[in-house]
Amino acid sequence: ALGELGAWTAWLRENGRRSIVLLGHSRATNQVSRYAAGADAVSALVLVAPGVWSHGAASRRFAGRGGGELAPLLAEAEAMIESGGADDVIGPIPFLHCDDAAVSARSFTSYYTDDPLFDTFALLEGNGLPAIVLTGSEDRLSDGVEVAVAGLADGATVEHVSIDGADHFFRDLYAYDVVEAVQAWLAEIERP
Image (cartoon, rainbow, N blue to C red):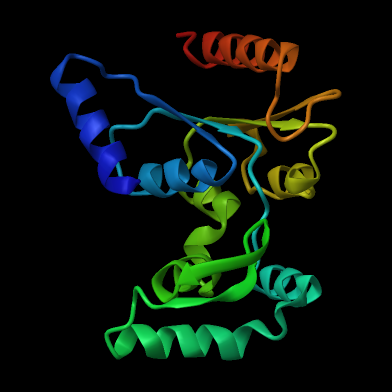
């Protein structure tokens, strides 16, 4: 995703755009935050339905879904990769939101490795960009976002909007609520 974001932002810059706002939904909130942390082309971020990440919580969820201890399986997947078996399949195991998935060792490690870059809110704090974080009141995948936003060192650059009744996907009229909130926020941050 980072390479594609780079290609599109380069194209926008080449075509005269100086103010580039990236929007990500769910897992893509982490991808746009990762990209923005290393790019000077981005002026603001819109994060819709982000999750709050910690390796410990991911390990507990994995075990709680019947996957057992994460560390040994992660070590096995890493060993498979080191021996040339990155595309070898592990499973059936719980993977992300699937209960019985068959996934490559590379995919498994890419989502379960203890990597601080999975922490979207640490990236957000580190890049200092203005950001709006939108969550749905009925979205259990975004639990803890309000606390994460409040915990940022400079809460003045990050705004949190909870859309009452929306779930993780902001279906139907909730999408309009997202658009209206983003438009109002952009108008506010673009004032001279």
